[in-house]
Length: 459
Image (cartoon, rainbow, N blue to C red; front, side):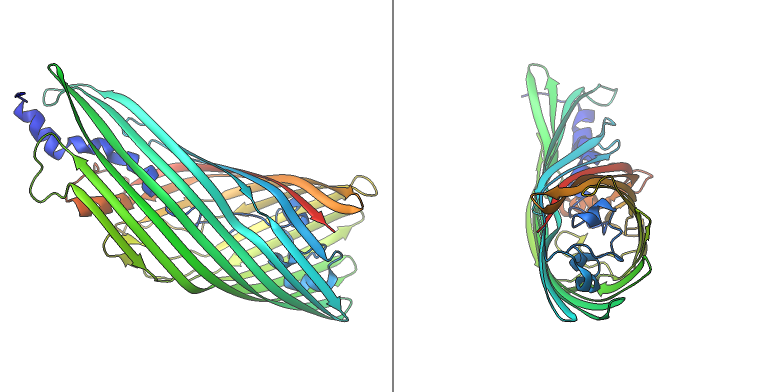
């Protein structure tokens, strides 16, 4: 029988499992793909080219997403965005126990947008389907390091790891109509149904090797969770557009209402030890829970103005989202809130377009994608990301086989903070202080970057 120093035994019982520490933040800190921003994906051809500054414009059927009143002035009755590619990277700084960053990457082929419209006298009708959010992530990261021996502990080799598989999608189906009493004014209304589904299996843990004589002791910790969150959202909107002598003005008011929600989560936790754990510790846990508590959403007011200055088109948008006071609803079995407050947010976009020939134009956009989240250290098990993003877009618009097309891209980037205090819920389940105390309330610095490439056709 191997004789272990008593100080080693005590250290392992109450301290050695801490090597998993902040490494688990990568696993827990993003349970939903990106619920902290409203401009996850820009939609349409010309609208994306202008950074989303499209509330006052109406050249293609992406008006179904920006201002349905523009249906009365749409020039083409069919629009499709295809072959949209998306890449995103998020870095959480100094997450692993040895100070290394956790890097996440996602690459997706996004379905895009398709719309149809017809016009009968002063009335116009449209239908569209759009992918409003879409991402797939397969992240896996291992960190190896040597923990040196001290007067009270033996040298250990540590492997910390994080695995994240995410499938996130949101599709919006919209019916809209517009009435144009005369050439300068158009009113519109629409009703959208959006299906949102987020599925993920996220896990992390550590393997600890301790050399004692000729034997190697393996200990460790592993935690994983599977989430499946399905929502049906109803979004009514009313809108108006007005144009006069090169100027165009637009406004649209809308709000999301939850029709149904199915939230399911399963947690698995395993603590492996060569020495007996205290009686109050739960070394093996499997917990399942399901709830239908709905999240409240803000009112959204989109306003825009555009002006045709000789050959140069200028367009500006302001999108306002009201704050939402929503008490955190905790899933009892796993002590994780599945609803949250939303802060008041404004996003701005500025677009420019200039013709370079009779059939081609170059467009540029500058826009914001600000976070709707706020870090609140009074919430015990909060998981939140507070990163404001700035974006730029550029594109070429031309004609192919008598069909207008747009090819372009946009890039978003930003710095901020994330909080991953929900890892503490695992301690509640196991009964051990698995994570080291810190004076940051489990807040880490973070950066986010994303790149979107797209092609749009009008026909």
